[in-house]
Length: 137
Image (cartoon, rainbow, N blue to C red):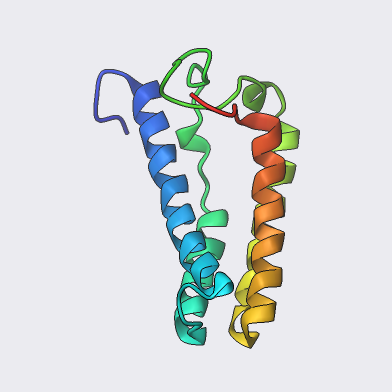
């Protein structure tokens, strides 16, 4: 439901929070992959489990018509083509699911596996962002 008189703005805030949460867990794994944080297989597994879960959350309610960067400049980078290309969006969404499951299933195998899994998820995210997200607000 909505928490203000502007359902589109609520949806934008919700999805920004959702993707920021995913980025938080991804960033924790990147720290281990870079060696900035000591690799911990159990913690890496926990983080990868969250990422895989988030990838599979139905976020349809966070994408109402009228919530693109054209409709709400300065609030979102979501391009209008998200709403005109649902099949493309779903393909990229499935890529996030698939790559995050690979990460989830291999992350405890050590740093090389962690790096490979992160690379797959990063490629899936970047490919979608390149199509459907403006570079800046």
